[in-house]
Image (tube, rainbow over all chains, first blue to last red; front, side, top):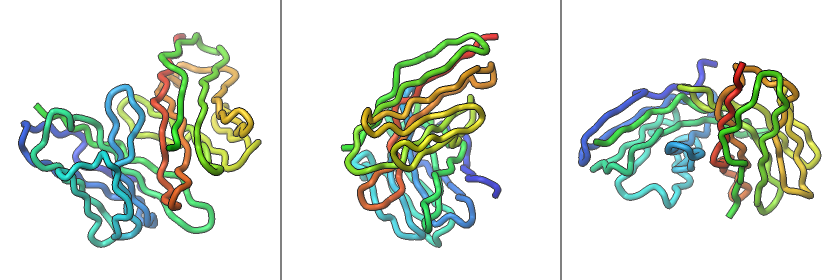
Length: 115
Length: 114
């Protein structure tokens, strides 16, 4: 169990640029989640995948945000035309289904700063 | 919709003091309840969980009991250490659609002084 891995750890970008983050879940986990966390707040759900299918998206996920999990393994989260309000920690988590859903295992996050 | 409310922080305690962090929830159905901890510079780690009413979750000296009648899941520890300084998040599992997703409270910062 190597844990959930996120890359990069930090990203600084200028307003209007596009950014892409990557998440590698725990290998046997079929569910993958993206959350956003701003300073002093708890994580807020953005979207989740079961295998390669994106099954739910939050209203927080504007049209500028897109997530993929093409082969049911790693996932990417892209933000187009970034805005200063997008500055946050983006967290990825994974879990498995089956008898008794496993709890979510989180990565260390990608901190995005939009200048 | 479902929600979680935690006590405001920061909570500042001396080493070996007793800790309580309050958590209450609003939910339809019977969610599972969780406490996660986030140490500085790290991701969230599961601390403990309870899946049904009257269950007690425990780990590393921390405990929380699922109280359906008061819709609460308060975190307690009998004697805190400096190394317990972190942000603690209470969460519940969303019962709609069997997604497994969690809904989090806003977090409570704990500072333990030697």
